[in-house]
Image 1 (cartoon, rainbow, N blue to C red):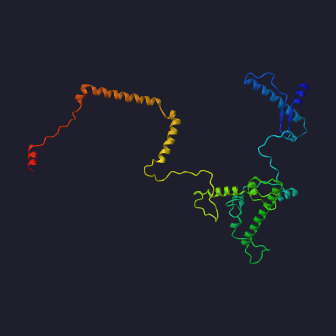
Image 2: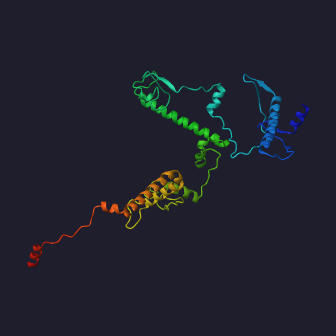
Image 3: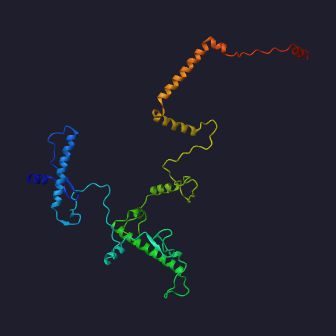
Length: 332
């Protein structure tokens, strides 16, 4: 046990990151094989894990159903990160109110009973349950003013409610911007258009940046900004990227078809890559042998005399003209 405590005291243990390191470790002799190296690393790793577990069990713990729970100390080693840790967002007004009153969030069911149709429908979205716009009759109340349209009043109240929610949302964003902990989905919009009343300094864009953005917006159409309306004094947009090239619909005289060339290039690439898969060597050899045998038989057939006798004589003799006809022709 004394030897174990002495070896564990040599380790540098960071419980915040559950990490241990032995600065005095060295190989007595270089490992002769990979297997020996792996065994040495496993042995040292086992010692480090055992040191971490021993240190964890020495910390004060609380009993739980799953076992003892230990609160880890803050990490001592700063590990490299690509981006800094996100700052905690300040609580919203509703979160502060719910905490003061002891209100806890509970998960609502997605399906709700619709009293109008007597069926179960979704709580929110298209064709949701208990839709106020589909109610044909609204019960009158004592507080209603005579001559007032209840449907118009309901629409106005809904509009006011939405405006109030939007105002609260922008206020929460202002508070988050002051701390520097804006949500990720509004971070880009907040940097371009800062929220009124926040401490964030508006970013000034240079003339070149604005020109680049305008060029990207102009060339984002299918025509590349060719048919877009220009403002008075607006310069032609700069397009740094490559335009898409399409094959001509009608070929000119004396021009080779570009489409054919493109197709041939693709086929040549495919054949060169997969020629060993497409070529059946045995079949090619058999075909070559068959053709060779046919040639040889044809040559033998031509040289033999019997074959010439069997063949029909195809020489045609000229028909001699009748004497009478010739005389008549001469007489004429």
